[in-house]
Image (tube, rainbow, N blue to C red; front, side, top):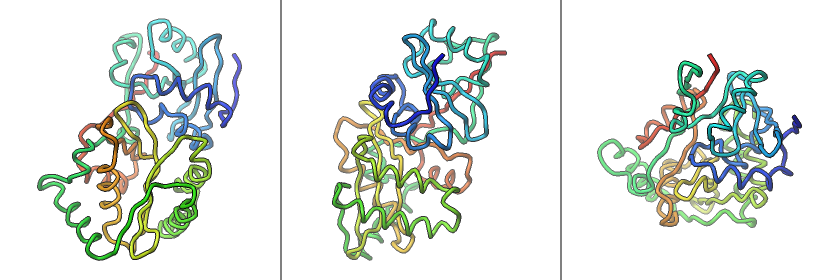
Length: 284
């Protein structure tokens, strides 16, 4: 079987295949795989007419991932490949009947789970549970003269300035954040078919969002960076971005929390409408 480290040259091969997979899990995106290829040591595997992606989970499990919808023939090939891998991952919940017990065992980690919110919720922050978000957004609007624009080439330098200050604010080395992946996303946003918005407060760049379409109804937010000195910037950004989304989209995928408590609390505070579990499937 031929194996190659995943790089930008694989976009033409993988992007269309992954978009055709019937799931809104954030890993089924070439941009996501490419930008985090070093973290997960992604490889592309060629097996006849089939293509797979191999990598490491954050906790070190070796996995094999199909680059298409799974059918019984694909299940058999994946089962054979488990001789060289620990798990099949990430497996959407609707696929589990194709991996029946007792032959297969299923498990999932909360840290892998994607947080999904409706566009309607994020564009309105309705109800008592989100009243703090509404208040913070209102404070941002009242405290600062604000503007928002599409994130285009002429504004990448401003987004990079936000990213640099955000990284400083984090108080940890860049290797402990997604800083390097975000730098590359800004540098290659056209090559990776990413899009987003940039937000200004008091005439200064205050935050940006960068993501892509996962499927016909779901948009993934790969990166959202805001500066702490602008109170309410995140609440404003999410709300503003949701309000300008094309009508075809119903949901925003904020991706996983990686098991980090601060991320979990932040994402839970927006009251997700759906939690997309990513199953790990093993042979018993």
